[in-house]
Image 1: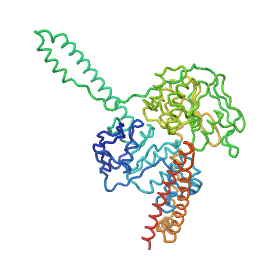
Image 2 (image 1 turned 90 degrees about the vertical axis):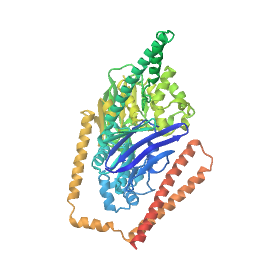
Image 3 (image 1 turned 120 degrees about the vertical axis):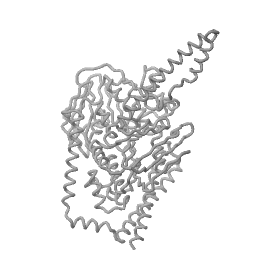
Amino acid sequence: MGVLFQITNAHKSYGDQVLLDGATATISDNTKVGFVGRNGAGKSTLLRILLGEEELDSGEVARHPSLRLGYLRQHDPFLPGETGLDYLMRDSGQPDWRCGEIAGQFEIKGAYLNGPVKELSGGWQTRLKLAALLLHEPNLLMLDEPTNFLDLRTQILLEHFLRDYRGACLIVSHDRSFLNATCTHTLGLSRGKLTSFPGKVDGYLEFIRENRERDERANAAVMAKRKHLEDFIARNKARAATAGLAQSKAKALEKLETVEIIGDEPTPHIRPPQVEPRKGVALRCRDLEIGYPDRKVARDVQLELDHGVRAAVVGDNGQGKTTFLRTLVESLKPLSGEVKWGHGCKIGTYAQHVYTTLPEEFTVLEYLQSKGKGRKIQEVLEVAGALLFRGSHVDKQIKVLSGGERARVVLAGLLLSDYNVLILDEPGNHLDVDTVEALVEAIQGYAGTVIFTSHDRHFTGAVANCIVEVREGRVALYPGKYDDYVYRVNKEVEAGEREAASERAKLPADVLKARAKRAARGADEIRADLERVEASISELEATRGELEVKLGEPASDAELQRICDKLAETADALDAAEQKYAALQAELEASA
């Protein structure tokens, strides 16, 4: 087995923050590795180092000469106005039939492939980026939170692909179910050290827990023996008859050492909101029709949920899960029918649109204290710490926080409140594996009602005791458990894969020959592509110029941040277009 990457004695710091401290690890070919660690531990930094985008302070990263790296980036690499097929052809240089073939593995067809990329949801855009990676035929895939925005069906498609993928993978994810399904090995980053484990993430977490418990027992025994020796020495060192023995014991005491517990990080603990249990119906939907003036999402919704349920709202992306939740909390009015909450329901919401309503002049601590009235300051700080606001971070003003940090502030505020109904849209996003587990335990201990969506199967399976499915214009209780729902979707995906394989097998020989012929592109076709990319470059340069002018004009902090973000996005797209232009020029010269 060949070694693709070897990291040796790696050190990396930002000021006082030590991310890598003598870290060492090896990534071999054909090995699928789940990469886990606390938020802020340095996982993304290490990925950038492996990509060559950052340098180590000291140490070495050795790369195999045949390494072909494919990296799933979080930013959008799409050009204005291009279709999914345009993007795949531009990015890979492959012919349309080959791009369509690979896109088909992720069920990207019809309008999803031939329509504008910018009109696709985040999940479908992620599918496109995954298809683009495969067209480059890498032997190591690096995926950073690939399940974000992916519905269950797409996650299963990706799992099936990774299961059969012959190359190596390094996958960062907070979703334990996804890692267990795709990765045979685990790499953990904690306190600057890398730990390689030859097993799945559940086994790794158990291994770490057992090691910590063993070391804690050993340390407790050492401390007990130390106390015994100290007591003996104190009683006997002044007596002539026992002074020699006391001196011998003192030497033994000096040799006693406790074990340093690697990865001994604070364990997140989240207390659920303290509310009184209630009986009866919490939510009743009658003759409900939801959607928008120009598009109906679901109709004839007849639904009742009792107090105390933990209902997972499931369904494919684009079916209407978020529309349904928005209708429940009255941020979107129903087209017809009614949503009626039970008497005394106090509703707290965690959703994308809520982040923008935070009081920007408040500090994190001030906001959390306002939400947790009556809570002791220590309780507030504990919840803040569990959601990664520790030390001076609680004194940050909300206006300087990133989107992910604002999301965690909203979640922390809900957990400190007295709401007896929680509506949660993807609460596990922006959290690491340990904090997701702490959130699971908190919700399990909550006496109120929870209605939520989540792409994290481990989270959903552990929390939900009721399933609401949004599918094909309907919203209804699903008759089975969450495992039954996952099983059904898995079977549907497998049936689709068998059908696609059968269709490919039916292709006649002349079609296959025609495809091979089309792969050899002529000069006219290459020049046409050059013209299209050149037009895109001109458009992007004009956009960049406009943004640079706006950057010099007076504006609010929020507007300046928006301009900077758009400028960075435009620069990335321009860089990609210029690289494609250079590649097309080289291809044209080679075809002459």
